[in-house]
Length: 294
Image (cartoon, rainbow, N blue to C red; front, side, top):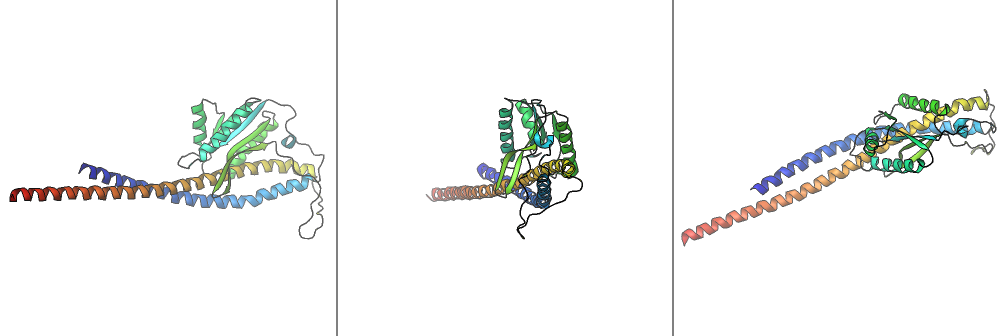
């Protein structure tokens, strides 16, 4: 009887867990849909900014900027921002990002001093457990807003132009498809050199596009390059949020399926134990009746 009661209690607990994980899966699905739409809407803007920089750079071959060429004097200090989640239950999302961040930190620490900043409570907790000092921790949440990211990017631009850091790198999860997300290190500053190999032919007419810039190409690049940095950082935060939601959705679906399978196993064990108990009681009754008749 005690065994039946224990199995029945476990069945109730498993059903409760399955309901919770199913609810979390539905919430993660809704958040993933919303975050995916934001990421999809921001991609054309980011692509247009990159295209404009390429077009302007093709007409300013002698343009020089520390945002592209790097600082004039090396300080031996690099900044690394690690983007993780505030909450767990999202599969290997945080573990993959933190493993890449730790590997990058150990590789860079041999040649320079690495200053670490974090976005997300999991990243801050990890480095605290490792005994690594975190310079600053940002609370962005799982729905990044452009105004908040712009403020962070502007701070990085000011620090970089002031010569505080040689490079600024972002460690985050890049979203490719629903089934593929990869933890990567992205260099935010200095920016990669824009392509300036000449004019490109129009895919429709086959003719070269010729632009007349007002103000000058150099003045335009002075405005476009900081905007590119802000757009890139925002895109990284958005892709991190999308990856977090999709990985939590997958993890909660797997947990729900496992809970249902375990519930079926418990139900089968319960029925077998109950059937065994009934058989034992019937055997005792029959044996008692036979003893009385004898």
